[in-house]
Image 1: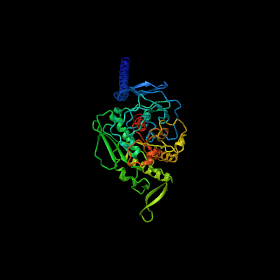
Image 2: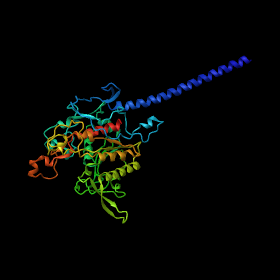
Image 3: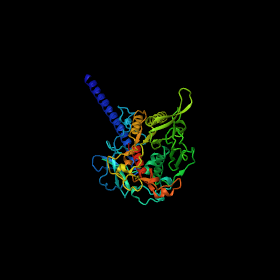
Image 4: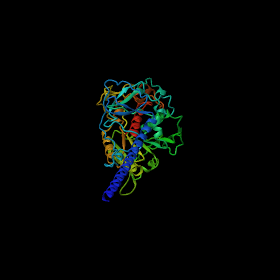
Length: 463
């Protein structure tokens, strides 16, 4: 009898053990399948837009490159850039125990090569894959940036490609960008340099759609291009100081007597137009420059409560504006749904003696980049860089910096100079002396701004 009971218990134990093993294996397979399914979906997202994994030139690890990405040999003596800019803040909402959440960024489809700074590199001449488009192919370019149409005799400035050290940029893929931005709103905010980056992006994307449709303005400061096939808009909003100023009219600017508004709520008028943007790209710098290094500000007197004009040290005023921008973004942006970028200062080239040129020259007639790795123009204020670094570093919202400054410092050849639509008639004296009216602030399109947008593309989708 005892033997029979023991035998039945042994059979029951074996049955329970077997059932437990089956359940465990089933659950494990389900979990593994879910993990595999997630990886497969990510791979399909990449393969769907024509991306394939290949080995890097150094053979260190696999990277994603676009099919048909043509490259050219590097020009000798190309310089490394200035590296003194803070890294992007991608860990502000990280959970140390959940690695997946720590690295999540909206719109990302992959990761850039670990440890590679895409802003640290050199310019290489590439007449195979550059430019991305021609001036005639893109009918959206503002006449202020159409250098070939206004007589520029050379085209070499269109063929320089940015090559980071130790890695490569993902080749700009218009179809991928439009697919990932389906139903989204991309908004550039800032001055005419931000506007030129906006026109560049419209040109880059226009190759993947039948046409953009310019939509009616809901504000005099707004320019909007819509891609109906993707329900996507690419927009620019004119706000050279981000806060209100006496320079807010996009056509009638008061350059010589600039006054910015620093009273409470002085950003509200502009920022009302930024709401519901999915991707925001800010820039502000050139309009701040003046010889006195001071800025007139409109404030509210603490005693009388009236608005008064006070002169303020430039860096202090700039810092106050940056803090207001950051506070507004912290209140209005969702880091799980939105991405915020800040484009660093665009340099000027008015003093050719700074790069070893003639005493009274500037960007006019320049046809080659600067290859001195230590070059840094006097118009690019590192004190402003420190203000930006401090303001964004203390933010509770992840920012991504598009560090265009050092790479653009080398491009004395890429400015519009005299080859643009002139707002006013030229005098005979000006015609005899082209340097006197050369625009060494703005850049030709196609040109340097296309590289700025390649960096935006890489940081948006492969951070």
